[in-house]
Length: 534
Image (cartoon, rainbow, N blue to C red; front, top):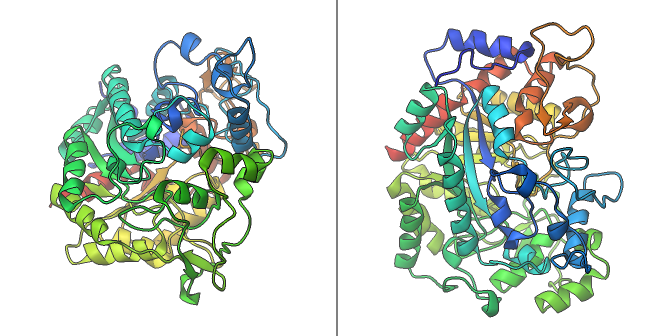
């Protein structure tokens, strides 16, 4: 099964990577620490469209039932959900985007770099990324009870049911294709990548694992909710997830939970915290040393963009006024909630099992508490899709000293790519200035309701079918009948990784050292995971 050369799609990046691979005794290839191949089964199963596998003519052909308004010709549609979907897609886009619902094989309108609500990790896309050098992904289950409720979806709403459905779907996807295999140990990763295949590690990025939050929708309940779990309940749920193959865990996602506090950076998550956790974020003034400039007082801009009369609709659907949060203290602001006693129980159990722990999305106090709690053991920590906090930033990005501690401990820092090639190059440079220790990977958040890199219009990439192109130029990606061009269309799905790296190499934004750093990430990942088990 081993393919040679490693990157078989041609272009300048392939020349660099193949030369590096020939001279390396370590695992080589790209690592994406943050993907969501089964997100179609999260968010109530109707907000996000498209499974990662199956006949695309049937399952990826028209999203009208999910994303269109109700009508006699579309009885499954919903006008509120249509506004939410179009509003999400339009957030980083110049114009309102009421998208064409037709998909495969022409894919005239989606997936795009900005639309967020259509599958971007289909097997056709994933195969091209693998052919171009991708050798490991962490595939996370993800959901939002609040978004499922607001979108008036059919459910399930609860985290445990949504997570279990996605875990089963990821296993099914991987088992159906020979070019990839599920990895549950570091030795599996070495064997799979050593054989030229794609290693898939399963993770959970849920607002609260085990339904450890209040039952806000009794009519939609899955398994029992436990807003005050015992220590044994927490250990049992972590072990249940571990037993079914999950190896990578987010203790905290977008809302406060029994483990700790979430990062303050998007006011819509304040609504979700109130709905699921029972109280709005507890806000405090951030110290000057934190470099935070975020102000908590603006209105819920997300819902104002995606819905007409957002206060009325939210109040009716969720049962409270989303603008009813108490007056915050003097700005700038961060989450006052740190790591809780139940969070320490969870961390201890995860460390006992040798699981990978990701601190992205934690509020700053919970991040620092988590680093402190795991420091005595020298336990490797992961930040799978992030950047370095600038002066005046918010809690979502880590300060450089936090990133340096992660790498110095033998952990991994996945650079979030949504900011594009300049952001990636600048972040790698900042990390290298802070520490010589390796451990830098990528974190795309494909299919995670997050934007991907926008088109740069730099004109640097030459595709093999361009007039006068050399024979070894990059082979163009086709999604169905649609030819892809990252220069004009951006990073539309995970299959565009070869084009993304090619753009970085051709433009000079990625140095040869940067490319080497990114393509030695599998060895760093295995070492970090082995450190967790040790």
